[in-house]
Image (cartoon, rainbow, N blue to C red):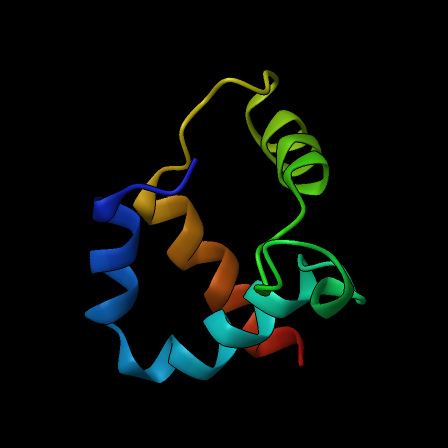
Length: 78
């Protein structure tokens, strides 16, 4: 779902880095340290649901512009 293009778009926007980290953990299971691989990896089911609600189908790849727009909204909303 995440592509190098999405990551590059975030890297180019230092004003959104803290927001991106917050969003990353918002999509991560709360007890991530209790289950392998013991990394704060976003829950696949939650991401699939979010992609489906955004694009109408779960097999779409996130567009970098959409991720940046979401992060800008999230920054503004907080």
